[in-house]
Amino acid sequence: MTRFPLRPGVAMLGRAAAGLSVALLAGCASLSPDGGLDDVSRLTSERVGQPASFRQDAADGKTAGADRDSQLQTLLAQPLSADAAVRVALLNSPALKSALAELGVSEAEMVQAGRMRNPSLSFGRIHGGGESEIDRGVMFDLAGLLTLPMRSRIEQGRFEQAKLRAAGQAVQLAADTRRAYFTAVAAAQSAQFAEQVRGAAEASAELAERMSKVGNWSKLDQARERAFYADAVTQLARARHEALSSREQLLRLLGLREQGFSLPERLPELPAAPREIRQAEAQALEQRLDVLAARRDTEATASALGLNRATRFVNVLDAGYVNKSSSGAPRENGYEVSLELPLFDWGGARVARAEAQYMQAVHRTADVALRARSEVREAYSGYRSAYDIARHYRDEVVPLRRKISDEVLLRYNGMLASVFELLADSREQLASVNGAIESQRDFWIAETRLQSALNGAGNNEARTNP
Image (cartoon, rainbow, N blue to C red; front, side):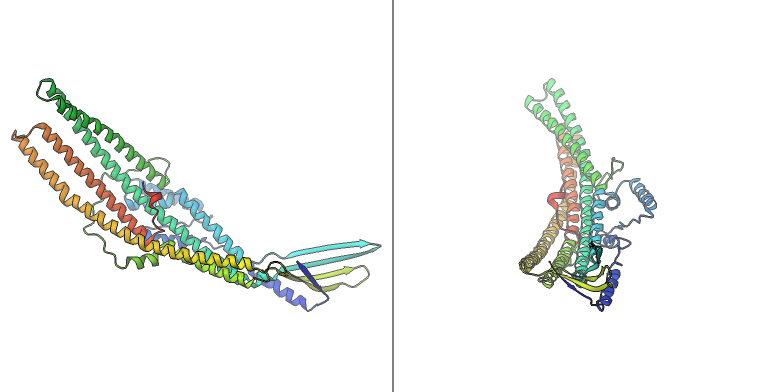
């Protein structure tokens, strides 16, 4: 660092005063009233189809907390629907609140970038031999002033990117909650059918044992019935655990401490027809939050590259007002400039690093767009397949099994079929109904994945699959 003291340029005082005025104006940058949460709420509501309000003023913290508790009580007072579960999660999830708190960090960095570095004040006193000398100085960061607009634009872009990331986490929470909801309802429904299968197997095993004792049933057939009963008991235990596990997962996403909520007994019915989506890939590129965030990252990185090129040779430039007082002499006024001389570091490495980061951002954006196109095609194919399978179970498999069951019951009433044939047919009918439940669950989960692929923050099935 080399300093160039220049005295007594009094005309420089006016320039120093102008610099001070600019510094004071730059200090006017302040935090926004909502902290960016209003934009996050809007982005989230547009994609989940639910009202989402994340803003909470500190002055009205108690009122906002009471309103939130009132909404939660209203939503939890009746069996949850999928939309109600999403609303509870958006209102109550501690994980989402933690993610939204990161938005304040980004806004603080944006505001800080819009403010000049504080001036430095220097004071020195030398005395001896009956004389004293006093030096005073005020230094301002001129390099920071010159680059202030560019740095502000860069951090503004970072803040917009942070909003998109926060909205993406909210949308992802909504998708995770819907998947967990449909899984929990289907698991509870399957557990009920598993209980019926166990009851039928127990009755069949008891009847086989009685008939075996009187010689009307072989040991082999009796062993088969007992084996089926043992398998039914095992399947029931697994179904009960799956119901509990899926309910606990939903509980965590809802942000509730206890299982103070109820679920409907059945999954929602299939829609009358599947959705037809035109230009799904273009829609995903326009609306997906991860794609928008990647574009913002590329823009901010490009601006940062321009800043590094602009400050390649001069990165530190300070100027300010100084005066000097000596015993028995008039005060001397002047100015001082502090300039970093690029003797050893010409900024080439810093610029090369910025260029590499920019290319990294460009390729990352291209990769996100490529994955978005692929995921939306895959999600739509899964959605249509799941709908066709669920409709096939509803319209073909279950009615056919019911028809077979009615025919077996008629034959049993006419003494043309044994009770074991009737029990075996009941077990097969229950198995087909359980398959219908699973296909219906798979459809609603596929529908959620399609929404996430079109509007959300990407497909994180490996992390969110129950």
